[in-house]
Length: 143
Image 1 (tube, rainbow, N blue to C red):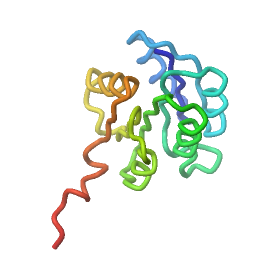
Image 2 (image 1 turned 90 degrees about the vertical axis):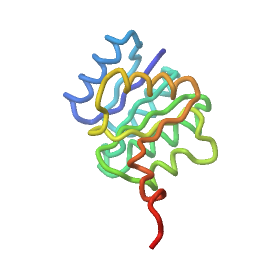
Image 3 (image 1 turned 60 degrees about the vertical axis):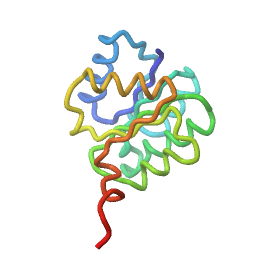
Image 4 (image 1 turned 120 degrees about the vertical axis):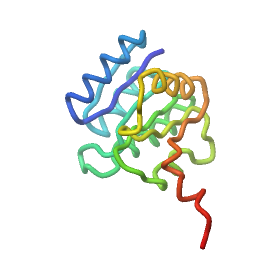
C-alpha cells in the first residue's frame, strides 16, 4: 500500500511515517501543508492519503480541503483524516455522497496501533471509518 502523509508537526509526521513503514506500508510522499499534500498525491498517486485537518498555510481546515481536492482529482484514492477535535461538519463534508474509502479519526482516541492499522486497511479497501465521538450529537435524544 502506497501512502502520502500530511502533518504539519514534524515529530508527529515523522512518527507516523515510521509507524506506517514499520507496518510494511510504503510512504511515497510527505507534506507539511495543504497545497503540498495535493502536489504529493498528484505526483505519486498513492492508494491512501493520511492528513491532519488543521494545517498551514491558514491553520484552519487546509488538510481537509486538500483531502477533498484529492478525492475530486484522484477518484479511488482513499483518504484518512486525523483531527485533534470533533468537527462533525468536516466529517460529513468529507464523507459527501460517496463515503467509500474515507476515514475520520480523532488523534487522542486512537488507543492502540492494531486498531489504527485496521482502520487504515479498512479505508484503503474502500470501507468507511468514523470515530463515534464525531457523530455523537446525532445519537443524542432531542429534548
